[in-house]
Length: 332
Image (cartoon, rainbow, N blue to C red; front, side, top):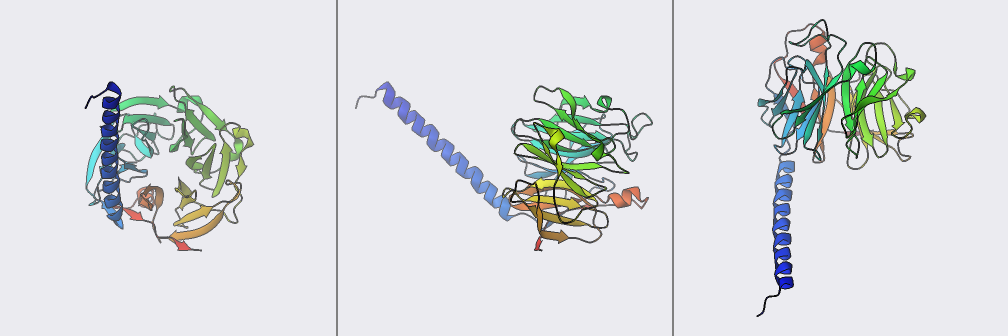
C-alpha cells in the first residue's frame, strides 16, 4: 500500500488525538476520585498560624492558606499537614489569596494589622501591597506597593480576577479598590465615600461577567460595580444585611456564597434572577462560635476556613489548630 504524505499526516493526527483523549480521561478520572474523597473537615496542624485566606492548588490538590502572624503561605493536605510554599520577607501579614490558573501564578494581599512577627512602626496600619508568585514553586514574580496610590490607613484585604486577568484588591481602611492590569500597571480602579465607615469596610470581592460584587464588612451590604463604568455602582437589593460580611465565592451554577463571621457566624447561599441587581437567600449554614473568613470550591463542595481571629485579636492563648470544613447548607 502506497503511503502518501497526506495519509501519514492524518494517521499522525489521529494518534495525537487519541493520546490526548486518553490523557484527558486519565485526568478526569483522577479528578473524580479526588472529588469522592473530599473530607468533611481538615484540621491545620500549625499552632499560632491564624490563616485568613484560603485557596486550592490545582496541581497539588492541596489547600493554600495565608497567615496573619507569620507573613507566609503554606500548603495543607487532607490530613492537615502543613508545608511552607511562599516565604517572602516582604510579606508582613498575608491576607487574601487568589490562584490564577491561566497564568500559573498565586496572588497574595499583604497588610500589617499589628500582629505579625514582621510588624513595624513603618508598616502598621499603613501597608497595602500585593505579591505575585509562581504557582509551580512559590518563587516571586512581582511585587506592587499599592498604599502609595492613596493617602491614609490601609489594609489590603481580598482579591478578584476578571476574565482578562486583571487583578482587583479591596482596602478595608481606605475607600478604595485597586487594579493591576495585564501589563502590570497598578492604579485606583474606583474610590467612593460610600465605602467609608468605622472599623473594617470593603472586604470580600469577586468578579462576575462584566462586574464586581464587593462586600462591606461593617454594614453587611453588597455592591455591584460595573467594570466599564464603576461610578454606576449600586447596592444589591436583599431583604436583610450581613454584618461581618467577609469572603465571597461564585459557584458553577451562578449562586453566590457569602461568609459572615462575628455574631452571625453563617454562610449564606444567594441566588439572583436579574444579574445581581437583587438577590435572595436560598440556604444557610450556621456554625456557632466560628470565625469563618474565606472559602473555596473543591469540585462541587464549598469549604470555609475558621481563622480564629477573635482569639488572635482578643488576646487569648495561641490557637493550636485551625479548621477547614465542608459547608452543609440547609434550605431556608
